[in-house]
Length: 191
Image (cartoon, rainbow, N blue to C red; front, side, top):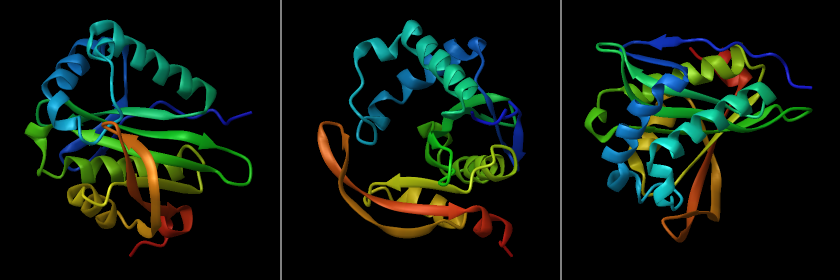
């Protein structure tokens, strides 16, 4: 049985993360549509149905079910200056037992890139992972060509543990990914 994990908002500087709500469907759809081309080379292929109101409503419903089951924790990334939804960050593939691990994935609106929102969101979700979700380890996997994302996790204190060859199929191509990790000991041992 998974632990009961609170649904809460966490703020870091000009960025906040909060669980998605059904009322986010329109904003999430607009964000997905405006970033469709930008995200295409970083994500698995998506059907046209994903980029509809029904598709985004389904994503939020799946996120809510995963949270209730303890299998994942997805958050909206919000710009605190205007409370605008600017991205998504999630702990997925949660494994309990002796591992207490989750994978980390995130993206931020192209128009909001370069303002520290990804860094703030990653810091916030790591706090959530270790302080509220009871996880021991968080692992992002990043394509070597994604230098900006690599800088984000390095700033957050993640260590590079190796490269997984042909790890995920992205935009129709099996892409290598650098595997990073941060443990509870790393988090609480930060200077």
